[in-house]
Amino acid sequence: MGSRHVRDEAWEKLRLFESDMAQSAIRVVLQPGKIAREYVLGRRKSHTHPLKLLLAAIVILLLVIAQVDYLGTDDETLSKAIELVRTYSKWSFSLGIIAVLIASSLVFWRCRGFNLVEQLVLATYVQFVIITANILNLSPLLLGSTPERVAKHRFYSGYYMDWVEAGIVFFAFGQFFAIDWRHQWWRAALGAAVFYGAKEGLFYLYARAVIRIVLAQLS
Image (cartoon, rainbow, N blue to C red; front, top):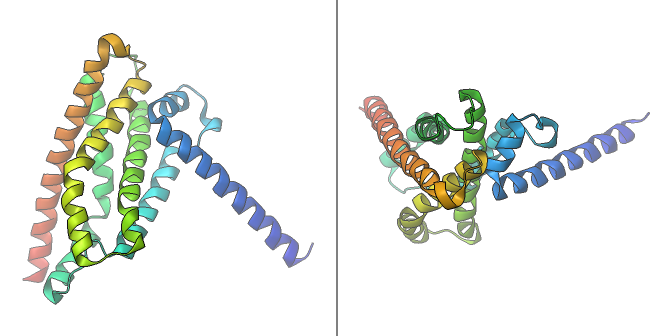
């Protein structure tokens, strides 16, 4: 067996892995709650591990943010501050998972008997879909980003992305807990509202902590 054969075999396995990952990602994006439900009920071999998808999405999002210079500035002092914020904000991606977990635990704590670990699987899949939505939202800037376009994009995104994320949580809760949409739609809506409130609160506290750390290092 030569080195070329080993290289070709490794490349073929990588292509199959990427294909399986892409197909799994599409299924999760379309039905995050259903996939999470099937995963915790035993069909683990049929679906990609939620953490694997989440990590892949985080890497892609960070690459897109860097490519479009979404947090860029010409001010040298401000640029240094932003770099510090980036460093200390790496864990912020986990806040969405915590927000989903808080919402599902509070609103569906007596529904279907899912434990905390199983709801964590749901939260991880949902956070993957939310990050994917943010990647798609940023993708038009890959065609060409200027400080003006980035500022305008950031401004308008603030109006609709919260609704998009809440909508993802709404449908994921309905699918995962198999609710009767005709009579219990309000439960999924309440879960989405609690998610939004929890997310805003967590990001506020996290941002204050990061700002204090950054200011202390810059002083």
